[in-house]
Each structure stands twice: as C-alpha cells, then as structure tokens.
Image 1: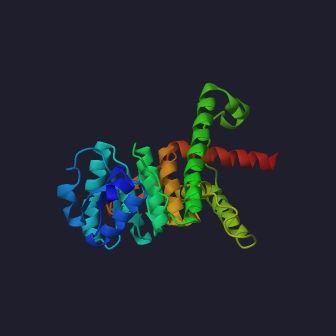
Image 2 (image 1 turned 120 degrees about the vertical axis):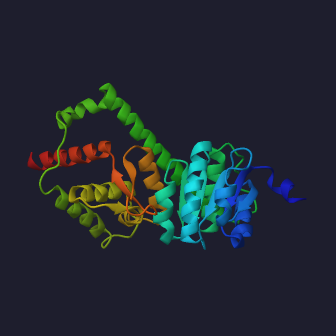
Length: 306
C-alpha cells in the first residue's frame, strides 16, 4: 500500500520553515489527514508564497529561523493569506511570540508555542476540517493520545460556544431583551473613577493569591485575567505586548494566544503596531471592551455601597 492510499488526498498544506524540519512537518501533516504540496524555506517565502494553485493551509514553523528573514517573510505570508483567505497554523518557540503576533494575529491563525507533536496534529486537523479538508486522524495514533486529542478539540468547541453565547447576549441587549433588566447600569455612558487602576491591580493580585492556597489550574479564566490586565494598563497609560499579555493570562502560552485570537475576533481586543519597532505589536481594549469594563466597575461600586 503506497502513502497516498494510506492517507488519502486530504487537505493541501504548504509548509514554511527550515529545510531540516521538512520531514517531521510532513509526517505531522499526514497524521492530521493532509498532504504536503511543497516546502518553502524562509529565504524563499517572498518569491514563492502564493504561487501554488488553490487555497492551501499554511503550516509555519519558526524554529531555527533568522529574525530578519522571518520579519520579511511573515509580512508576505500575512498579505497572501489575507488576500486568499488561507488558514495558518504556526508552531513557534515562546521567544518568537511578539514577532509572530505583530504580523499574524487573526481569526484564521492558530498559534502554538512549544507544542507537542500531538498538539500540532490536532491544530492541523481542526484547521484542515474548517477549511473544507478531510482532516481525520488515523488509527495508528497511539492509545492514550486519542483521549488527549479529544480534550483539545473539546476545548476548541467550548471556546466557540462561549463566543456564541456572547453574540446572542449582545443581540438581546440591542433588541431590549435580557439586557433591559440592567438598564439602570447603562443609563449614561460609564466613566472611569479615581483609584480604578489600583482597584483593578488589587483584583489581579487577589486572583493570583488563590493559587497559593488551592491546586493550580482550578481557577483558570484567561479571558478575564487579560481583560483586567489590559484595562489596568489603559488606566495607567502603559502598553502591553502580546508576550506580556500571555503571562498575565496565567495559562500556557498556546492557550493564551488562542484566547487573544478569540477575544480579537469577538471585538474586545485590538492589535496596535509598535511605531518604533514593527517586529512588535501591543494589545489594547476596543471601545466596546473599555465601556464594558467601566460599566462593570461602576456597577460593582454601587453593589458594594448598597
């Protein structure tokens, strides 16, 4: 039985990365149910990306890449992927977060830091399936790994469900539905109050304090932790890099990046390029998120004073 018979046609993938990683990347793509169209080394990206027919998935591996070459290539990858609506899966080291995020954060991008082979296979399978490919894992996946993969996919589904509920709630508020019960909190545009920055920082410290008394991971809530951190930074007039925001999320970098992407897609986070260094971007709250945080703190203050 030849390789094509074993894996099927699957979804098409262009692998971008160091030549030494080509074989390993190809194996992961095939395990996820895909097929490699070709491998593009970093120095050749500007000339070759986008030359292939169709709309392949892009697998980008930054390990061992030169920052200068990667900066040029990532800008080109983003332009082509945006124009052709191509999904991207990025495998990177933690040290590459800011450079990659400055170019590639978006709803079509899945970013993984220091990922295991299984995590990469899962990300490729999910991206391939959503892109219309036949992203099926094969029976030779070792026993035990299939359960871990199921949990990874369940997490993706959970995030999607949470965002769907957020969208439904927003629609109800606009129609004067459930949101009417809280009309008194929104009678006037909320404003930040003196001392709010220190109050938010105390909230953050209190959340981290719990980890010293209970088993780690019980209180993971990266979306809220990042909202608090970005709102405090807004009040203090400081800026937060993507890597710093991942630390504030208090979860694994891959999980934090996934939530940054989801919060950006939900219209709560926005990427703001660093005017002094295009290899870095800052994350900020949108006007909608700022209004929500101000309203929340004002409502909390009224509750405490009632």
